[in-house]
Length: 319
Image 1 (cartoon, helix red, strand yellow):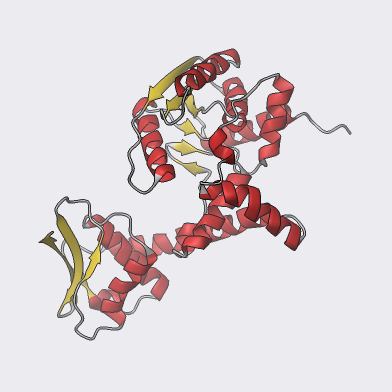
Image 2: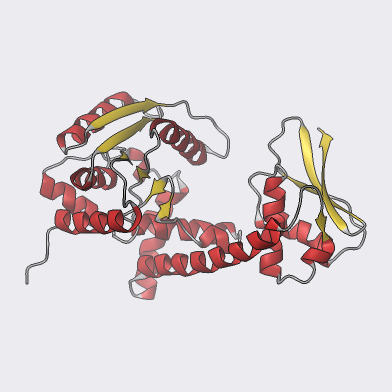
């Protein structure tokens, strides 16, 4: 039997995803960069239901407005009912990649008008995300990868390789934009894609990207189960302090998730595994030590978690 074409394969993937996660919807959006992954996704998504393309112009490259205009033309040509160019200003917090991502997601969230947004992340992107998480060493959550269904963000292509979207564009006669940032070795993800993953594939005999994606799925399932256990504990805790007597009997993995949820509810942001474990030490290795500084969202103040007798408390000090 002949192998089905790439467009047919992608259409089947998106149709199954819509059946499983988008039942009852009458429209959706697709985040379109103009590259092969998002362009192929826009083409097949538009055959499933009315699709609006949302094109973010980061303004970081010369000619970015022309690239966005071309992406808009492509979107309408492949059947999208609308295509909007969203111009953003990219800050500097967290580095260029993180800042661009934050600006992009804010713009997409504001423009989606209540509809979910399809993102064109593939299995290759998932593998790269797992490797980045491993390098950061921030625990299972950082290597659990991306969810395929994380409303309002939908990732129907997480189970397919990048080469399939490239073949689909070729079948459709589309000339996608080739982002020069995707070959710029200044970016960590580019070096993972072009150097680290090929080396791992060679050393380990292939199948590494798929294995990393499977690992992400398994870890995400475990993480979600532990999160649910922690949420049940948090549901029984009122506002204010966190009793050590509640935390002490819990398994470490659950206890640290309770601490994380409590910190986030109290105004902490961007927590790392190291910070959470330092607060955990106030419970399991208490020797009268002082409070632990954690990142907070309130300007000109520092947020601390400390222990007073048998209760963990949050307090702030001016910078």
